[in-house]
Image (tube, rainbow, N blue to C red; front, side, top):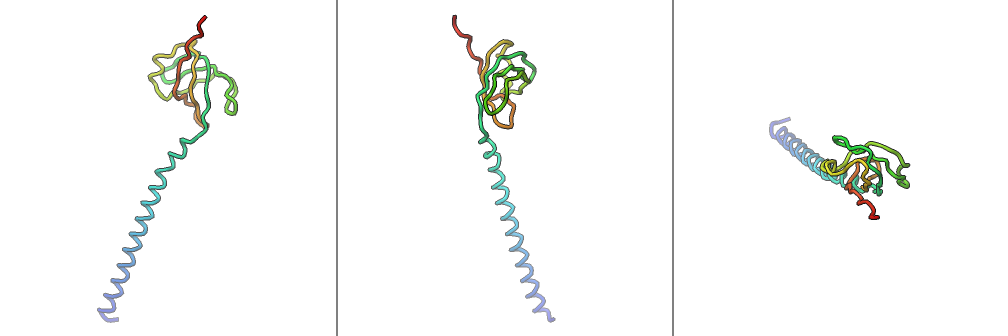
Length: 119
């Protein structure tokens, strides 16, 4: 094999490797782009209306005796994390609350105190 044939072969191999590297980089970029949409799909979980009476207020949680949530959980008393910790400063023991809960997530979202019924 003479030097010119060797150089030709080397150039073709180098070009082929560069093309392969570009294709792999493009494939990686597309995979990252597709993966970035995965969390958006997870937020489409079914939501439920949560109602209950506050039994205690913790540093990061509310213990609530909740009503039955049809299709999600039976009535029970349980400690729940909240999505906005500042709500723990306004909720008191004995308050009736409403919130939103999602499939696979026991966090109370958008907690509201229900005003007592007027007599």
